[in-house]
Image 1: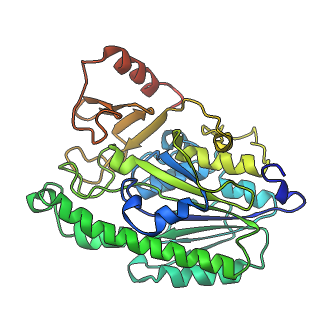
Image 2: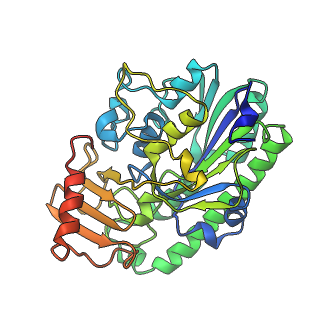
Image 3: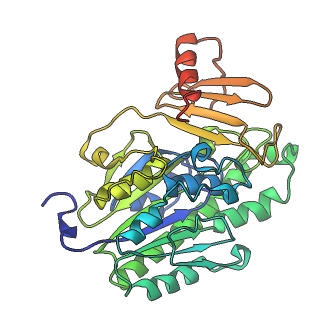
Length: 376
């Protein structure tokens, strides 16, 4: 049986679960996430377009970076170019899918193509209860696309760190290890949620006929770099390096793919799975499918990232002012406000403590050409 042969004659349900705000270096320190690897294809090097939720989600749902889809600033979900950008949900709805999501507020999730969006107050939400009820109600609307956002880590970050400390608070940044230990407890809780919600998916008879995608939109700081108490200010790997689990009846299990993939690649990958062709009368999708990576194939992708922080040393919430290009080994960061450049060898310096600008001109120039490409 070939990949996806079991879908022949019927359309699989698509269940996407986004766990908001998990660092890539946290998941091996808790109990459930390593277990999840055993029943999935695990992509350990997913690079997000933007290290905050709205920018990341709009890139995921449009398959293109924010400077093309219009969401290139913290407050710019209203600028999404819905006339010229088709969303994943619109493609799925056009193929007969019922589509539903939950959202902590208007504009957080791109609305085009959704049949229903349940809006709630995330600071008083029981995510497991809400999502269980959504699964219960949607299970007879086959085929369906369901997008669930687990936001408790974000809530905990806001209540315990973002509201409590300033961007340069010595008490916070001098206690990185303590902050990280508290954060790991929240990641553990998210694992408990995932384990329980997957059991519900199985209980409702949806596990065998669904593609399940579990991923994070961005990571967080727990005091890593002064000026960024949470996320969205800088473009270091603790916020832009993410992960994705892919689960399905005919997918292999227990495989890790280390090749670089991007948040803009998720949409074309799902379309590739379902043999959905891109339409020509809209802006072209920038991402490309990573489906062949499961079979051991790969290519050299470069991720383009942007942010414009609400705070920090160079805030720019209305328009992204910090940009980066990230390859497997190297990363170049450029801050348009202060004209500062940073170059990091990610293999030798994964924590990005040693700026190599001026010390490897060939790499620097090559990445700069990638950064200023018109397609970015």
